[in-house]
Length: 353
View 1 (tube, helix red, strand yellow):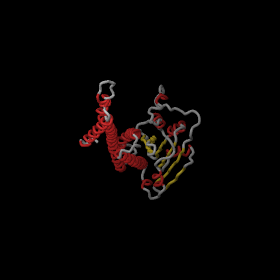
View 2: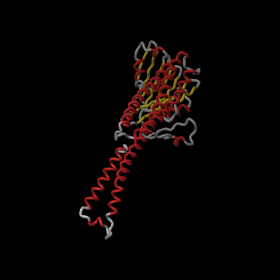
View 3: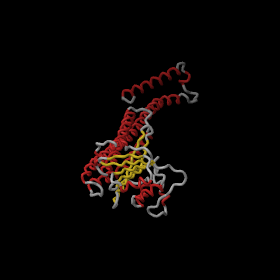
View 4: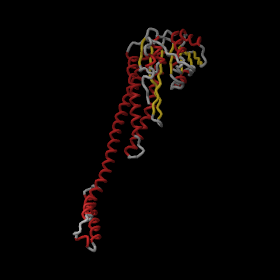
């Protein structure tokens, strides 16, 4: 289950921009650096602190990617060297940020969520990605190793790639576009799950899980919460005069904005489908209950006159002429059987059976 505000209590009473350092063993950050221009390229995975600091004044474009944020002191030292505001550092280390964009004199701070969906378990995993954009550098911070940026890395390794000929603003567009494209893959899986659940529900299969339906509804709410602010974020990059963003790159951000709107429309469609399935599920339960009650009512109705006859002849009176009749038992049982058959025929003729 998703937990919110897990670290809010730790910040109580601390000044703005305060960093909370983890105690005990912590995972070392995994760092990769891409330096490139139209006629040069280098890729490094083992980078010293001095080499990272040199990227600030590099003549080429530098993309620094950092996985795992447990070493808060390292992150803080790196950001301080690049002139990052303490409030931004706090946001980078706090993984509960709402997707947003903040403009500063020397950099732009962008934070958004990446999503990973596990169809078998029906669970959604979110990860915060923080991006710092400067005039000649882009720094990405991710909570854990593994991401969806491999296509960008492959493009950077090609000499003829457009991304190698552009600046940091185009790299930011490529990162945002890759994350948004990953959303489409997730919604394909969710669409398949919804279609399968709808088929099971319409077929009246007993293994249909209302719990699974509820979990999927909750995950869609979480997705909307993670994606909806992205529309405003990309819209600002597209329309406003933002530092370090070339006007010709705004067209590309417009494409990302269109994709974001499509995704939000898909979420609304899926939510409507889920609500319809909930109503259909409740209706199917009520129909099954009505069928059961109908059968029980018919059975009860048939046995009411039979119980009356049995009750009458079960009375212990001395002067009951029928009790001494030789074929009284056979006549009574036959009468009860004929009466039951007549009632069954009547119910069938009415279409109640």
